[in-house]
Image (tube, rainbow, N blue to C red; front, side):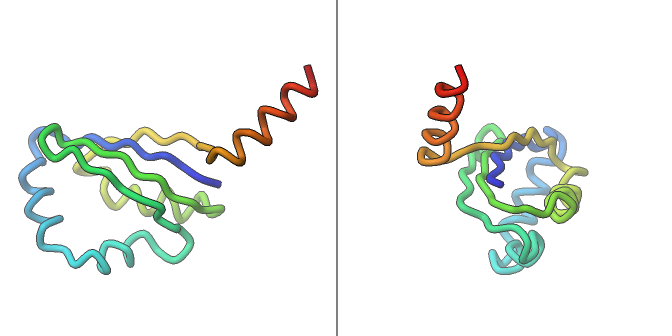
Length: 98
């Protein structure tokens, strides 16, 4: 399952998070997410303290535990998403079902 994560840093925590993130080795960050989660990509809006990521996992617990490591400093909105091929197949099924 693919998930889209939108995050917004707590306003009073932005610079603390920037400092912590800048000091992290990205391999350390990848280790935090664990092997059950495949990160497809992340995009950051540093000025507004927001961003979006797409990841893939079938392990809801691992996904929740990963985000809980950061929820003291940011809020998350998550939703399942489909790539073009998956969306096309689902649309064909929906159209056939009427």
